[in-house]
Image 1 (tube, rainbow, N blue to C red):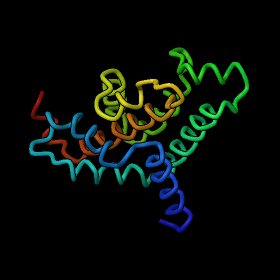
Image 2: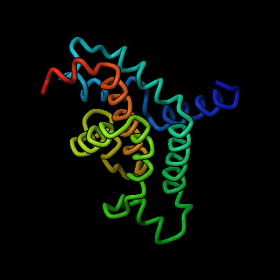
Image 3: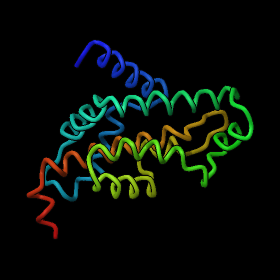
Amino acid sequence: MTPNQEKLHDIAVADLHKRGVEVSDIAKLVLFLQKDYIKDLQEAECENSVEVVLRKREVQNVIITGIQLDVLTEKHQLDEPLQSILTEDEGLYGIDEIMALGIVNVYGTIGFTNYGYIDKVKPGILAILNAHEPGKIHTFLDDIVGAIAAAAASRLAHAHPEEEDDIY
């Protein structure tokens, strides 16, 4: 990884941390998604998979962009109607999900199903990010975190194809 890539990675991870999301939080989501499919899966392996996903430049770009939009929304620095759309996290907006799908797409179609499922049930940190507390905007971040978890889970599924095949 070049120095610029390393710097971008560090900024993306620091931005997640500033918004209350740790790599371990995302690893717990990965474990949630894969525990029934990969025998004896441990959180450490899930965390490693998250770290690999976080090293992808396209993932870093989505993290930095999405978090910046959430922060600008919190500061009321966007023009209407975008300010209200993002403040309310309107369901038909969809750009937040489109950005998240850019992350999911890195590891193939299984990522889409993982993402759809985790976005629907919102376990762990996703429930906290999606709580819509006054003054806290996570319109993009909740989808980004779910997408990172889905991508990391998909990466593990690709690494353990023999175990995935056992369930069918």
